Length: 147
Image (cartoon, rainbow, N blue to C red):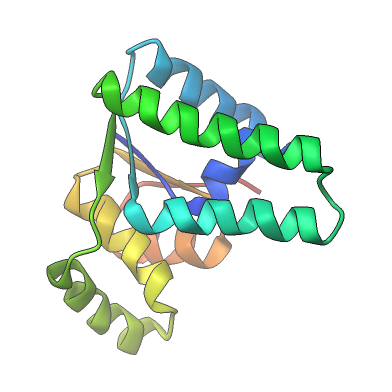
């Protein structure tokens, strides 16, 4: 089980440093070689990033539509193949973020990524966010920082 945060997922659809590694992870999941997981929170966050990039002129309308359609399509395909576990945002998980917020002074959504990865017992958490990476390591998770 590989856990992807929003910054890692975006790298699948928009060329950035670390994209090649995420593309390979998706290829392996689509081929049935490994399972992916991410929080339900990430779906809205990824769509928001695509929208922000489009509004700033970093993506054309065509590229925005292609990224959006591919993301949603692959998410549905991976769910049908049972190669994707979407972690629901539950009160139980949110309460587990509170000690991390207070101890490490992080945003709740960053703590939610770490708590969610731990919840699904992910072998690795992939992130393009250095703060999420550092928090995951502090919590004893294997994390890959996609810089």
